[in-house]
Image 1: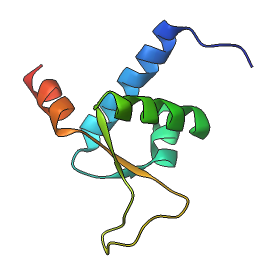
Image 2 (image 1 turned 120 degrees about the vertical axis):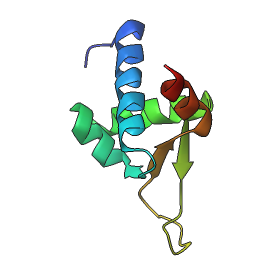
Image 3 (image 1 turned 135 degrees about the vertical axis):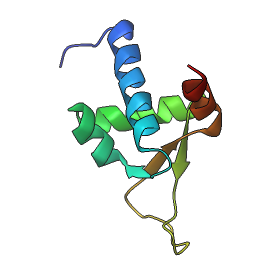
Length: 88
């Protein structure tokens, strides 16, 4: 598999943030994000974890009843990132 340049990774990360902003406050699974931006699920998961490290997205590991997800992760844009997008 060819390597993706840092510029392309940044653009894809921006697409992810834009999608999460557009569906806020809804929580979405990794597979939904991957389907929306037409990318591989594992690649999107790696980018989401990187964005989480930067404080731009928040991982939600429990469902509405408080039960932990075993194999799935839901995501939402962080409050800080939402405020930045809303101001722009």
